[in-house]
Amino acid sequence: MPASEAASPTLVRAARGKAATKTDPSETRTVRVKRGEQPSRAPLTPFQRWAWTRFKDRVKMGPSESILEDNLQKAHMRLRAEEYLAWVMAATFVTAAALSIAGLVLGVLIYLSGTGLTNLILAGGIAVLLPVGGTGITNLLLKSTPSGNAKRRGAEIDRKIGAAMSFVSAMASADVNIDQIFRDLAQEKIYGAVADEAAWITRDTELLGVDILTAIRVGANRTPSKRFQDFLQGVVTTATSGGQLKPYFLIKAEQYQRENKLDVMRRTETMGLLAETFVTVVVAFPLFLVIIIAIFAVIGNGGGNLLEILWGIIGAMIPAFQFVFVLYMQGLAAES
Image (cartoon, rainbow, N blue to C red):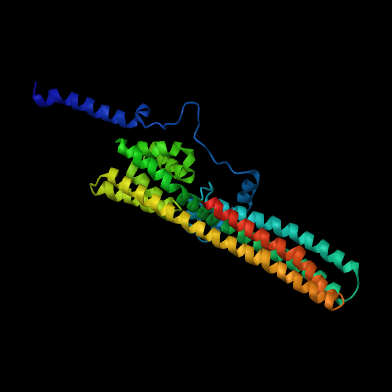
């Protein structure tokens, strides 16, 4: 028998084996999740489903919202841009209807409370300005929510990145693989938003089958923090250029620790300056102003206007200044 004829059945069986490997479901890559867990989903709320059903055609007629899509990803808001715009339209519509009814009722009550042209103008102004202004403000707030959430997440990442890089450099010093480093970092919830970013990179590698460098590159484009983006891009550049990641991690950990110390010192100096300003503006200045106005009121035989100004300073200006300073100081302390 010729050699070619003897080899042909073997080649056929090999070809069939390769074809079976390509189509065999048992050979496909399985999704790895923890035992007893299911992949998380982001179902729409009933109101969001109604909004999408009602306004999806109008949303699809508009231009593509790539910036909104990026902000939603950076804010980890699990909605598509079209779904979010439909929700904004629905919420704006409901707000406009509610404020229109409220403005109409208030306008009627004001008009019925007295007669005259002034009451008529005031009633008409409230009936028109309340729904128009409230609807516009609501629409602007809802559209700016993704970018605002993304900026807050970016600030949180910047606060936690120094400690997270110390963890990464310690893992790298133990010769741990880069994918295992991000997997362990994702499980350390003490690092906050940094752990969430690492969890998304791990999701891309384990659930979507993406290689680690591609997942890191995608994560760099997705993160809202410029510092974390530079770190991830440096990881990709160092790995693809043949460099060593261990020295890179150690250098970045020292850099972020040094930058965090400078940020803490800067915030501390700012808080000290605000404390001095608080004593001058909120304590000393109103006290002198109250004394001066009280003296003028006594000299002027208790002038009514001066007493009203005095009560306004005591009851409104001083508490408002204190409230603003407390909120601002609380925000600075939370960033430390």
